[in-house]
Structure formats: C-alpha cells, structure tokens
Image (tube, rainbow, N blue to C red; front, side, top):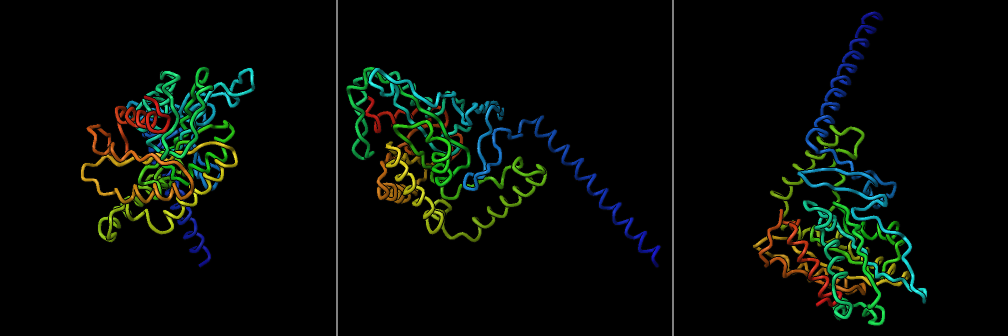
Length: 338
C-alpha cells in the first residue's frame, strides 16, 4: 500500500511538472508574439504608489499601429524640461509653465507626440503676439497674466497625461511628480469616463505572467460588457457619475484646489466631450463643471467640439485635427489668445 501511494504521488508530481512546462511554453510563445506584433507595452510599469497603481516607464519607446510612444527620462511623453526655470534680472522666471494632466486623450493615443494638444498649445502660445495674450476668461477663474511680463515671457506646456488614469490618479501624480516643476497653471483634461477609468487589470504586462494577465483581462472585459448590456439600467457614463465613483472625483478636485492654494498656481478643468453624434450627456458636463466650481477651480467646457466635423478615431480619442481644435479653444478661452 505504501508503494502504491508513492507511485500515485510521483504521478501527481509528473502531471504538475508537465502542466508547468506547457504553461511556460505558452507564456514564451505569447511574449514572442507580443514582440512580433508590437503589442508589448513597455511604456507602462507598476508603481509603488498605491493610488497611481502604474506609471510611465522613463526612457522607453513602444510602437503600436505605426505610432511611436516615447517616454522621456523624466517619465512623461514630451520633451525633457529642466526642473528649474531661467530667471530674469529681477529674479522672476522667464517662462510661464503649464502642466496638463489627463488620460489617454492628453497622452495622445493614436497621434504623434507633436500632434497632442499640449504640444500644439505650446506652439500656439509661443507663436502668438505678446500683446495678444490677454489672460484667462472670467469663468476660468484665473488671474490675468501680467502684461509687463509678456514681452519677455515664453511658454512651456508639459504633457503629464497617462493612459487609463482617472482624476484621483492625475491629482496624485501632480502632487508626487509634477509639482517639482513649479507650474503657474495646471490644466486637467476631464474625459467623461474618468470616474470609472482604472484599466490596469486589462494590461497583460502588469502581471508576472503576461498570458495570465491577458486571459484575466479579457475575461473581465467580457463580464463587464455582459453586465452593462443586460443588468445596467442606465448608460455607463451616467452610472459612473453617481455614488462613490463621482465622490472620489469631487475629493480629487478639493485636493487639487488645496495644492493650488499651497503652491500658488491656477487651475482650469477642461471638460472634453465624447465624439458621438447622438449626444446625451449635457447633464454630466454640468455636473462636473458644478463640482469643479464648488472646489474653486476654473472650468472650460468643450461641449461644442461634439457638434464639430472632426474625425475622431473612436468615441473617446480625437484625431490630430481634434487635438488642434482642443488646443485652439484652450488658447483662446483660458489664455485669451486671439
């Protein structure tokens, strides 16, 4: 009987060994496939910050669908900027620095880095006549840029967008990474899926096993789609702008206002619409705008973009023309650029 039990145990261990070997072979094939077909996401890594969960990986490039996503040495998709700004004879910075927070729209999914609206905005502000920059509109709630500074003032717009981030993560990133750049202005690009955005579970690269991550993520996507299709009694956008998910947005706005007061910078929340013809979320725009103003933040609602003839890549992501239009509206309505 002892011999029989020993043989059974050996058979069990052989089966486990074979399963492990098969899994390792499949894992290897999956990773080779990621490399061949360009699906390997090297620009995102896990973060030690429990709020961020993940972050951009410095000095990396990933090419997906013909677009190169390059992360600079400082950990964001943009040119590298010196932390300290040059000063004039009176000890004042010679540049007006703007930090843009956001998700994949700000990050520039589907467009080249130079086509993202933060980059386009920087070129517009730098190219505008000094006396054309009149300062923000009253609704933006910001102080006017002093005209005496404009003759020698340049502009820097730093793109801190990270795909998949929600408002809470964006404000955490500002507090832990971006404030060292001492911005004069912070722009938060609010997209209507922000309260429900947290797609780390859908990224295979965030798991020790990419194969497991892929299977797990696809399974969750299917379950979520079934739930939304058959059990959710209202559309997704309205659903996530209620209860705890939107309360977290409000708390993030309050924290952002406190940081602005502490570090003396201005804030504008720019509400970016979805690019869908049958639009039914005007009330969500009003809800977000109202909560931002309650926190003392400036607001720019880009709802008018929804009715434009832009050709978005999908309901969430504008194309290059859309990014240019977003930049134009910010330059005009926040900074008064004619």
